Length: 83
Image 1: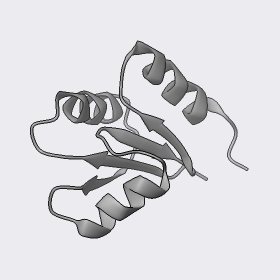
Image 2: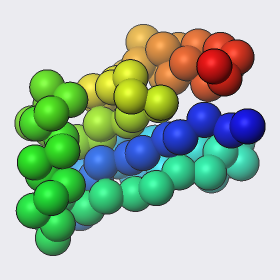
Image 3: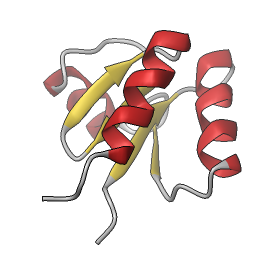
Image 4: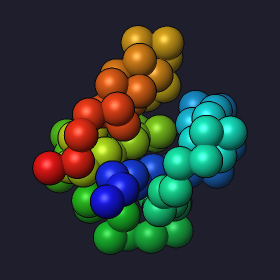
């Protein structure tokens, strides 16, 4: 069983591009939501306590941004066993 990964992005966001490339390079499947064109995605983003992109959600756990610290957090969430 794989983890559900969602990526909230908007055009022109360098962090969104970086996360997308990272996930693609590691063969991690994800669903991408563009908050610029999808009002429901914008509302869902707020549920996770975020108002910015990139926001990465792994099985309900949100990571806001994509610095080295957030990359490590993402790796930890992806490595945890699926419950």
